[in-house]
Image 1 (cartoon, rainbow, N blue to C red):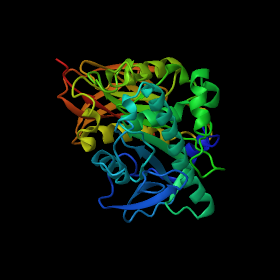
Image 2 (cartoon, rainbow, N blue to C red):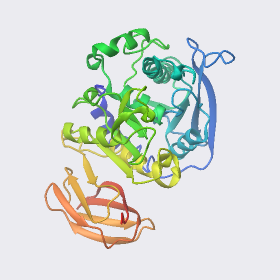
Image 3 (cartoon, rainbow, N blue to C red):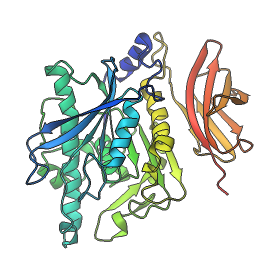
Length: 401
């Protein structure tokens, strides 16, 4: 999906107006409010629940009116789950405490019985495409409110992310990556049934573009959907996930279901294409590990990635300067590689208590730091020049043995 035209200008506006001071990376609020709204009445959640609803989370006492928005979708193999399951609540609250506006949506599902039918693969594919249509309607709901109702929720309409867990992550990744010219002939009918690339779930006349996707144990139907101008993606996934493979395999390991390519293959493709990305790989824990301990692992890792999209500063006089800093592997056990296109003189590493544990000079665009002597845990890597801080990244040091 093509980046919004105003993306570079938005980055500069954050430099000028200082909207990121103390926001978006660490929890700065404690109390969260939730509002439930119907974002479309075109489709129903169930026979007894008309329309599709979403829960919108905001920090109480937050007076900012230009906040990034994250729209999350729950998991459940497209047959179960709801907007108010605990994982969605935890994700929404964790990011609302950091100053985001967050939302958890209902989207259309199918039935477990349908997944036992001979055409289960086709039914599941259509359900995925329907969910993309629904999530796009939720995006447009906020932009419509911004334009017509005075921005009830205090969002920045040019800074919208989508994300989810499991099935919800599959929806978010496809929404972010798939353009009309990406759709192969064998999938065109499914999109036509759902109203085309923009869907028919409501709130027409507004953009459904996003500036990034968050994937917790997610996947994509085809790696060919990715183009060099696609949006950044951040993921968490375990190599032993038997529900949504870390590599490429049939969903649920069932030959009756479509093949999906998980985070391992996705991020290898994104690296090849030069798309900004980051991947947290678990070596055990299965499908649910990305949503286990959200406040300790997922939220800090994701917020660091999003912060660098929203808040990395660029020179007002030199918008073309790249602000990208990548560190890998993450987690790291021996050596941490740093691809730095921001300049700077030195690298400092702090532990999670704010103690400086390591210092190194910048050596060109690519640096390596030996981290094997560090204790296991979360660390902050900061790049400085003579004027001050240029970049702040987080990484996890772990002993894989």
